[in-house]
Image 1 (cartoon, rainbow, N blue to C red):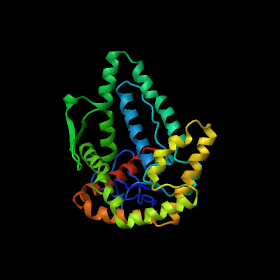
Image 2: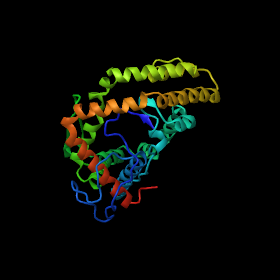
Image 3: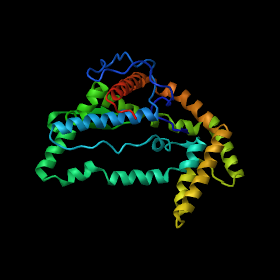
Length: 302
């Protein structure tokens, strides 16, 4: 675990209750009978949904006469290394700050068969491929005004949009609530750092780190200085340095009030700051759970 200052409600480990939607006929969007209590997806469930997205895109692209491969998709371990402070000692001991995970992800990205395939196509076919995958702007766009300002948009058509419609139930609504939910952290994260309780807890964490031989004021200082600490070191020595710091960070986060205080302050601030967006958050969660049931029905789960 780690304290994420997440854009949606804190991830739980509860399993989805109820039955999955039929593979042949998805549940009705908006009132899925199998959703149960609204919540965020676990990391493992996110992997299942993203695999379901890719599976639907693959089917659509194949029908358009193009090849398409599923993945690469970030693993559960990949998703656990992002956030303000590490709190999972076991993850820190296994991965440090995730340097090797990041290197593997970069290798997978560079070796993505979809990219290589697209580059191999003649120009005319590449245009057709791009239009089939991402749609044409002439077919209309979906625009979203973000809570933090600015506007994002995407084409309405293409296999990606069709996959989202098939999985989530309504692509324009999904795009709107997803982009909204993903931008909400900035509305309250600065207030967490400024909270007096958080500052006291951070001092306790810093004192714990100092006693362990790692004098850092906050987790971000470690991340800023880590490249210099490992520069010129052998891969093993660099990983050992990273792992020692990560384990100490996670140990001190749990043995001091930092992790618990950050979660408490975040919950309080979200309750107030995100009240205007509670309907969007609920819709985001509902559509995610609907997509999870549909992805499982497609056979996307491990």
